[in-house]
Image (spheres, rainbow, N blue to C red):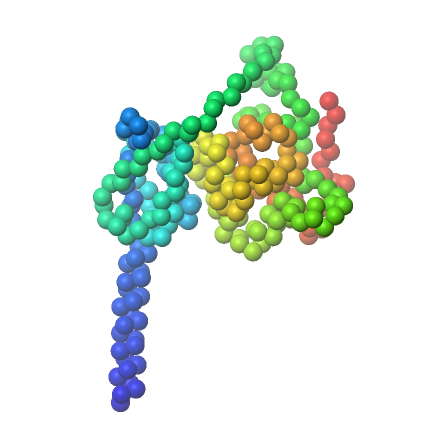
Length: 271
């Protein structure tokens, strides 16, 4: 009898625990405003991304936003020229109160950029061919057929075990195999229009570093290992980088599985 009573008590408290946990993980709306830390002016078009659910939004003209989230999610807030922050969502933040999030302007020095003029005539199809570029430059313009080579991993020869310790593309292949959620998150960004819009306006690489578990240097090595140029590394948006990494991964996966041969890959066109 005592054992039966104890068993029912166990079921009862397990039920209460399940209800409590379900309430804790319930999806709610996170509300807030993004402002400049110095002048307190709202930062419109700030990017807010839920790294767990891969949902995002952009602040309105007054800097306000609403984003679905649940307890324990991590939300990244960023604005061009400002230091990004990550916020761990707690139940207290989901009780309907609006957050006030202040971002600090980056103190990095602005480097001089020299832009050389080209003899462009104003016709897109013609001007694309006149823009100077190195032989590895990747340029994608909506409405224009891509004529450059599809990204493919370099066939690097590692002379020592230390040199072969970190091969970025191989690391990427293993990462996506062990943690398919990371792959699905990047694919979701590439697939959904609102996320594409957010990432197209980002150039800080922070989301990719978060999902790929790499620091900035390793991320740059990865893109380089995928045979993209320094020009692309410096000028591509985060969306373009995500697309480049996913394309590189698909080709590398096909190579590893023997579905394609290196000799059948597109070859570089000589200038």
